[in-house]
Length: 329
Image (cartoon, rainbow, N blue to C red; front, side, top):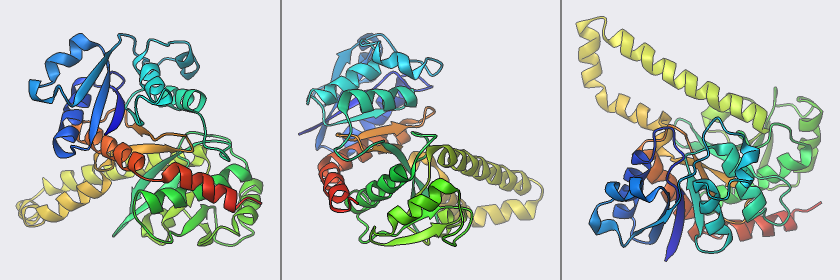
């Protein structure tokens, strides 16, 4: 049976929503055992007796806080993040999930678990909603500076992830730029365009609006641009929600209209809610690593765990290695 190691202490809101999400996950999926790494005296009271056989606890009291330096993570071998990563490295767990310090998780995963052969840098991938599906965008924060080779690897890893985990055949991949023409972009993206031309289903340059119109399945960019895009999208979604809410309060007609359209609003909320997707996979690591939002609620943690299980059950990593080798220049 699969074992998923969870950093139970790292989230902004403490261990309670993490354990609640973990319990919700084990209720729904009986094909894995959870290993919660954290302070035993805080975790035990949150776990009903009937789930004790599905949830193992590894006791530790050190937590890497959000304000700590990511470089310190390697020195703090008694922290919940380090121990959970070490479980994966040692083969005692098959995947890792954390809502804690993302920089610490990335550093530990890269240096302790290691990269897949042929991957020069791992990338964080996230799903962005479109009208009728989702677009996978990577990188969204692991690498602020990338060269053309890195971007090409991201494209290949993204395609394999979409095929293996999301079940989409022949996914289309685009390179984020400031215009569709091959001549557009900076020096790195122009070079990346040439390197990516032999990747199957590469559609060329795409623009920012293409992330949300569903014209492609994967959009590739460096982590600096990707992270700004992600935070901008989150801000826009939040602002639109507030605008709608404020306007609905202004008249009885608006309130009645909202009642009639509550199913539409519920559907819209589901499309833009990060909790629906759970977390972002760190692609290029030898074992599945899922990085959840620091403010994750129990639903987000549950779905992050499901992502980890799905990735661990797939041939994702071996297929990434095979594809990189097959498309090597």
